[in-house]
Amino acid sequence: MPPIPTSSPANVTVLRNVRPWGGEAVDLHVADGHITRVTPHLATDAAASGSTTPAPGEIDGRGFLALPGFVNAHAHVDKSWWGKPWVSYGGEATTQGRIAHEREHRDELGIPGVDVTVAVLREFLRHGTTAIRTHVDVDLGLGLRGIDVVRESLFVLGGAIDAEIVAFPQDGVLRRPGVLELLDAAAAAGAEHIGGLDPASIDRDPVRQLDGLFEIAERRGVGIDVHLHDGGELGAFQIELMIDRTVRAGLQGKVNVAHGFAVGQLPATRMADLVAAMGEAGISMTTVAPIGATPLPLDLLREHGVRVGLGTDGIRDLWAPYGTGDLLALTTRLAQLARFRYDEDLVRAARLATSDAGFFVGHDVHDLVEGARADIVLVDAENTQDAVVRAPARALVVAGGQVVARDGEVLV
Image (tube, rainbow, N blue to C red):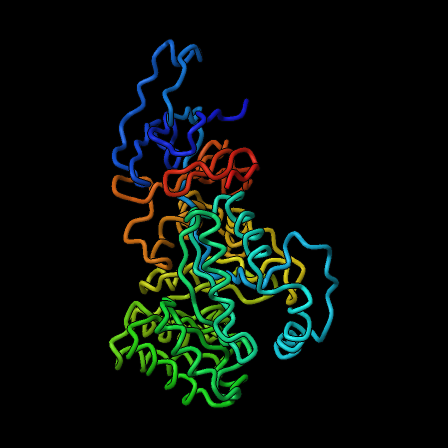
């Protein structure tokens, strides 16, 4: 099929003849970066023949499948060396080994830097990601410089990507005196969340690490997003500590467990009890659908109202050379690991990575409906299930009402 034409202005006023979620063809009307109306598409003979010249800002979607912009709920855009010459993997393949290797070599690669951060953000746009929750390293060597770099990079792209920032203590919290103060400073300076890292296995004191994080979050009114790799009962114990503190601090809906491998490793009854308690406390989870790890129990999490987001983790960085920034392809992997085969499950996987994930970036509504930010992705697919299974190339990406990518070319 020929490429989708766009008129010369970058801002969209009407996106005609698209099929949201594979339904009937509609026209999406856009103003001030938001969808203002959704109307049935009424094709005329002239329009069908291609003889009508579109008005400025009017785009013919050619009947393509339309999805909301993808939401990367767990990214590390400050770490990537995307666009630089190949960097060979080195160091020890342990969490502590990766931390040490990164800190030894990040300066020589200019990490964090605006050029590399913009490069990986543009790759996200190429693949249809229009909003992110990104963890940004805050440590004694960097201070808050990484957050400044990420904010400048987002500005360079003109707001094409909507973002929330997690101030992330990658090198530990308690074991590095002064890090709690840096997290507090980041929260005071506008970071939407503060992070934690394996309170037991990294800091060896889960009670004190979590007490410190929750004190800041409660006082500053920010969220908490903790990387938790610890498995089995050790991981479950730390989640229980978070549940208790979330309820006592009144932070329901503002605490997230990233990775949380322990949840999928517990016996069935223990797993069900823990997930039920997470749901009651309003604690969410994010996953990067890792190969080789026990998958999260998505059906059980859904049953108990635990929101789940999908993210890329690091993209081509000093932790691993893998990653493309393609969240639709990652959705395919999530569906495969979850053994999704029925149509409703495949659609659910797509919603997990798009409309349902608006929660992770502060969007009350993130869908192809009136009032939502105009984040729209077009793909040449029969339906949503087909898109999840094949992960076809993105034909058009609209972010905040602006065309930002077309047929693999990033325009910002």
